[in-house]
Image (tube, rainbow, N blue to C red; front, side, top):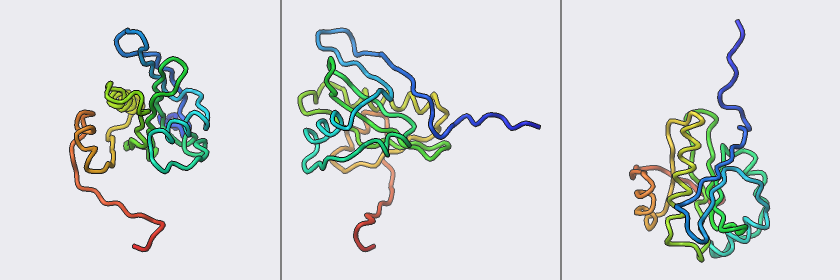
Length: 157
């Protein structure tokens, strides 16, 4: 008896999502796992996160279930990463919107598109960890608060 093909390959095929918010001048276009450079991501993260240090994103993106980028024209306006355990759990990481584009629903749209991709790929549970000041945002994204544990590994216990 031959085994069925694995429905969750380690490197899932990328899918394109040309969806946009309602048409308007300067509308945002969302793309699932597009080619994106370290330069684009580092510029976005430097603008959005105080203390961001330039790094290579390739090792992370290569292992992701998917990631979603929001573009205003050719400019990267937002990003979210969708990590996973190779089975039924996925994790929303690094939800980021450039300060010039905040307050327009882009963050929620990024997370919703990530959730759609996860659902399409057979994920049953979508997780997110966040700081208390982000609770209202993630509630708007459909998450409910749960107790969870976290341990920082670069310091003692």
